[in-house]
Length: 594
Image 1 (cartoon, helix red, strand yellow):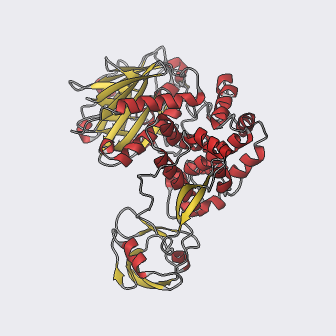
Image 2 (cartoon, helix red, strand yellow):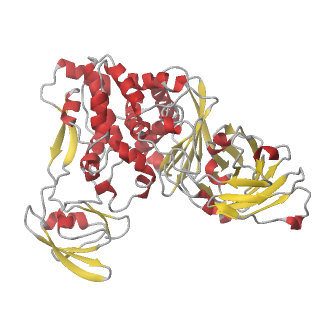
Image 3 (cartoon, helix red, strand yellow):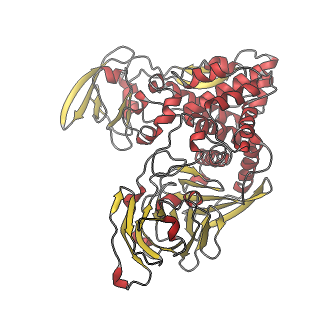
């Protein structure tokens, strides 16, 4: 197959695509005189059916040799399939369509005057029976532009794809990017950035990047499992965040001020570590259900708490090991994960395994009930990974840690040419701990997630320190205005009858705004004394009485136990690289919920 991609409509958000199928390819993909084409409805690494076909416009086709006026519009055979009727003559087929590309995420396609990005799943139609077909993608580039792909720089503007899996796994970025290259694990790693405007990439970033890559490689050890050099495609914009892993590359989206603000920069380094660790965990070592993908339907697994939760545990830990994150900042990030866990009543309603399986219908479709009824296998999975790491260190007397379990899982599954199951994960953890970890694992992932964190942290001579805060209201604002985005089940706001969608107007007769509502609440409230709350609901005013309660989500900070033992200090040093804790520069309070 040959794809011709034309970017002349980029300023209006359009990408034009022509596809040519050679006559010799048609016998492989034509059935009963029909060629059926499909577009993926999701992309690996982001577990939501995104219906990419909704961006396809004006699809038509003609057989080779037919005059220009011989274009036909095929009917759809399903929501994401087109059925092309062909003559019996052995001729090629030309397909033409446009993609509307104005959705700036790492999972979609975005076209602007300055640069164009697309994820493989969003652009390319494919024959239903042709998953093993190879293809070339020729991009008509504006003068001075380059084409960077998941395979690196396409100097001639041409990308060559082995098969459907390779096509889906290969993102593309066209423009005039800034680039830098670092070497790690005997491989070049290219950082390709667009959207920075006049902002510069600081000189120290290259060294920070290299140290992160080496620290990530050290977790599993051995040679990098890459076929070629690695590419980071970095998209910078006014808003937006995210990352998506690919076998030989990743796509990153971040605010363009990332390099000038400490917190933003640390978050970005954590994102890099997260996506790069997926080189091992997910893109190669992965759940058995992901060993082969069905790009037209959900692929369910109970093990995203390993695929993403373990990765979420390692991303900041890798930054700590690399020396680009200070101990205090790292512990504050762990503290935040614990705060988020404790502020998530849904962890008592849904297990981590269930959260993994329901990712397709819950995680990426969050609404006002999400935290009450479900849990996040990223952050909560990271807390579970911390508990498992702690137990391996304790049980092995410090001889092993979670790294050893990850290596064991890598050797016993990926290197054996298969995906992993829950029993594989338990076996790898048990080998590292030199004891059966089955009961602990199942208690963490098959029921309510309520681990004994003081016991887990006690291995390192740490405990969860809690500082009381203002009495509890139990609601969270949305991103715009004073509308309530969520009300926590059982909270004072919930008991008083407030609900998501109510517009908050006043506490105790004092007008509130988007920026001051937390301050007003803290000024008027005291424990157990009722507060009048004025809201607008569906255009009508309502006044309710809220009776505050002590806040169940106090400030959380990991602190040292009094007089830690020598064994605890040894474990602490092995985990954090030091026995001494330092303060964090990060703020810990949330401004949008009380």
